[in-house]
Amino acid sequence: IINPTWSAVDGYIVEQLLPKDAVLDAVLEANKAGGLPAIDVSPTQGKLLHMFAKMVGARRILEIGTLGGYSTIWMARALPEDGRLITLECEPHHAEVAKANIASAGLEAVVDIRVGAALDILPKLAAEANTQSQPFDLIFIDADKPNNANYLEWAMKLSRPGTVIVCDNVIRNGAVIDGKTSDVKVHGSRAAFEFQGSHPKLTATALQTVGSKGYDGFTIAIVE
Ligand code: SAM
Image (tube, rainbow, N blue to C red; front, side, top):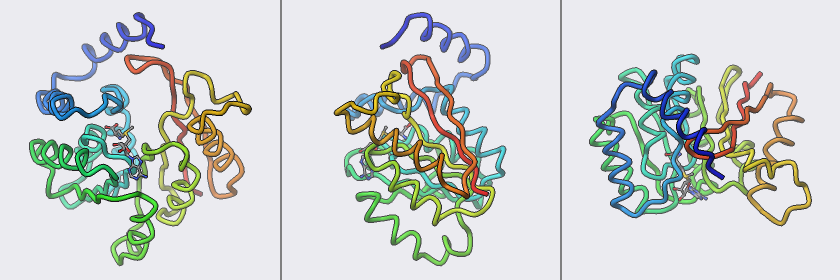
C-alpha cells in the first residue's frame, strides 16, 4: 500500500532536510538501468542510518543485503577515512552494480563487498583477525527476511557492548501481528522480534514507518 499523503510528506521532508544529492540520484538511476528492484531504503531512512552510524561513532559497519549499494553509501559516508563497511550480497549482478555505484561515490577504499550467501560468509568473517580485534559498531540486516533470526545470531557474535543492530522491513504492512500467515517473510519478522525480545543481552524496540516506500518499520537494538 502506498498512500499519496505518505509519499507527499516524504517529499516534503526530503525537500526540507535532505540537500540535493547527485551521487545518490545517480545510484538509483543506475539501479533502474541495471534492472534491480527498487527495494532500497528510502532517502529519509538512508539518512537515518547515516545518523545512527554517526551517533555510535561507527568505525566498522556490517550490512547484510547490499542490492545496488544505496544504503551502503549512506552509511559509509558516516565513516572516518580509515573506517570499514563490509556488505554481503548473494546476487553477483547486484554486487556488480553496487561496486560501480560505490566507486562513483568515491567510497571504494572504505567499502568491501563480499559476494555469496550471507550465512556462508558470516562464519568466515567471524574468523577474521580484524573482526575479532574490532567488532562491528553498527549492523544493518536487510536481506532475505526468513533468515532474520539467523542473522541476528551472527550479529551477536560480531558485536560488542554498545553495538547497534537495525533490522529492516519487520512490520510488513501490519502483517507482523498475524502469526497464522503462510508468508515466510512475516515469520522472519516475528522471529526477529522473538529473538530480540528474549535475548538477555539486547535492549530493543521497533518503529512503524510510513512514507514513499509504504507501511513498514524496523527494529533497533543495543547490545548490552
Ligand atoms: N540494503 C539495500 C538498500 O537499502 O539499498 C537493499 C537490500 S535488498 C532489500 C535485499 C538484498 O539482499 C538483495 O539484493 C538480495 O539479493 C540480497 N540477498 C537476499 N538473500 C541473500 C542472502 N542469503 N545472502 C546475501 N544477500 C542476500
